[in-house]
Amino acid sequence: MADRTVGLVGLGVMGANLARNIESRGHEVCVYNRTTETMRRFLREHAEGHRFRGMETLEELAAALPSPRAIILMVNAGPPVDAVIDALLPFLSPGDILVDGGNSNYQDTEARCARLSGKGIEYLGMGVSGGEEGALRGPSLMPGGSRQAYDHLEPVLRSIAAEADTGPCVAYVGPGGAGHFIKMVHNGIEYADMQLIAEAYDMLRRGYGLEPQRLAEVFSEWNSGELESYLIEITADILRTEDDQGREGLLLDYILDEAGQKGTGRWTTKASMDFAVPTPTITAAVDARALSSPKELRTHASNLLPYRDEIEFGSHETTSQVREALYASKICSYAQGFALIAKASEEMNWGIDLAETARIWKSGCIIRARFLDDVSAAYRIEPKTPNLALTDRFVGEIASRIDSWTEVVVAAMRAGIPVPAMAASLTYLNSLRTRRLPANLIQAQRDYFGAHTYKRIDREGDFHTQWY
Ligand code: 6PG
Image (cartoon, rainbow, N blue to C red; front, side, top):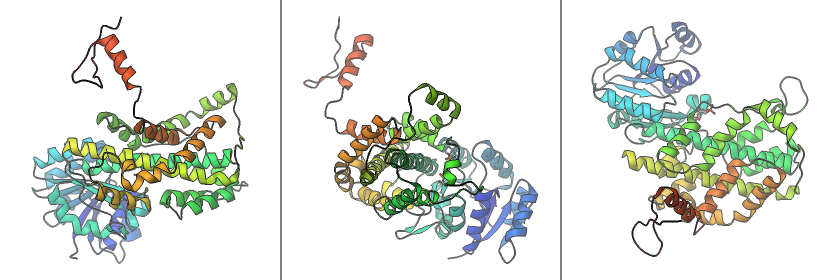
């Protein structure tokens, strides 16, 4: 592959690691950082024997790059992206390429694509997943926007992306904000995966009384089957890690139980409302983080209301039920995320390939998992399926787990262990498989108080009744 010279703006950890990754694949990288000292430090630490060139101004950066210029922005999402674009524009020429590799909101990316195409700039909004390590060794890349920009940069992107048995984890996602949209949904799914694992852990530890060592073994066992994934793997590691501040026992037990969030999960939930595609498991995961945060309020509530720390409601043998509940819940959460992508793609004319989406998540990213091969295969065979959970590939997997899954959720409810994501997935499935939902009553109520009309099951047309 012919080597390229690319520019990179923003030498935070992700930017620095991505720059090193690009250079390690044989390309020259011209690096710029707003604080020049950060750029100099980067050069001191990494430039010896490597093809990095430090730039002190954006003008210098633009002058150093061959035409068409290709510049990757690795700055914080939001106003900083516009600030860098505006500062760069005077030095760019039509045909030049800008790539936003941050976690930008897809609507911002849509707007930037439109604005910049008017100036002849080829813009790519690229989801980058895999954290610091992924950026350095091979992330999953989700580029969307200018096809021309993608085609030009494809050799570079393929060279730096994670390599899976199905090829490099990068593909052109679609025009406009398509790339950042699927990165956002990836993160929503990431939230759901993490919450589901946390609920399974809570059930096993508080419900079934498993000790940390056994818990670590259970998660390791799970990591060799249908649940095999990065998040299960790191959970097993976490459950083996002793406190690093000299206290006895697991480090995990000393970590404050308030979950943070930067916002991409919340965006997924908002998008699910905007596109009217339910994502209850993802939303439950977002809510669970928010609910965890007022620790004082929860402590107050736990003093007011009956609460048990130790529950023990089953034998250790039933861990397999939790495993089944976790896997079935996971399938439903992916079904929701992919349904959201499908609907957005249709409405926005993005033409997103769902099988490819699953394929590029196979390696490098946080939700990487063996299961994504099955998701990809399911969409290759049934590309127009309205729901992943109902494909031939998954419907049997779900059906065979419904009983265990229900038992786990019911046991959790009885014990007072919150399992919002598992319950949301189960309720999602129960709603899907219910032939006649009480939505008829909702329609009657709407018609009663607002003359909103309803349809009948036995004849065509819209009906209104004088109910009283
Ligand atoms: C990734 C991650 C990464 C980050 C998210 C979530 O794919 O590499 O999704 O983007 O972990 O920003 O962060 P929060 O949990 O703080 O929202």
